[in-house]
Image (cartoon, rainbow, N blue to C red; front, top):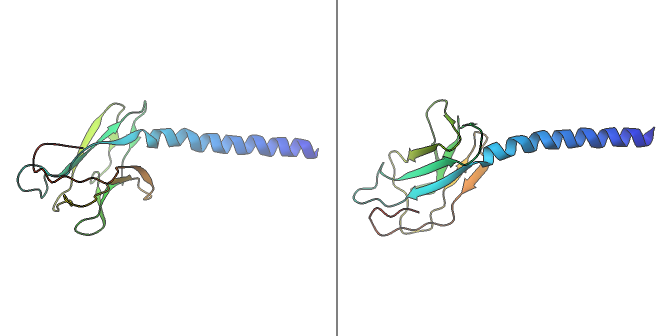
Length: 134
């Protein structure tokens, strides 16, 4: 009887882990694909991040954001309302009303509605004031 209970508990634990793992790939399928850190001319509201859904299912991005660390630490919402990103689709998000740091180590992270990190860049730097992107 004890071995049956242990076996059943093991099966239940596997089911819970499998259910959590089924959601994880969908969330992890959204990646930061491209970043414009220092566009030609005035940067305010011209800097952007492109997100790409590399997965096979749509992902609800409602409440998701992109972090920044200049002029202070904060989060730019991906969208003001509900938004779903289809498989293979791209979304460009502009940092409205602020400028990102060009000459220092800028790390951008994509966070979900709970604040959990989904993807992030390495330390980015761009002093070229042109159309080059990361």
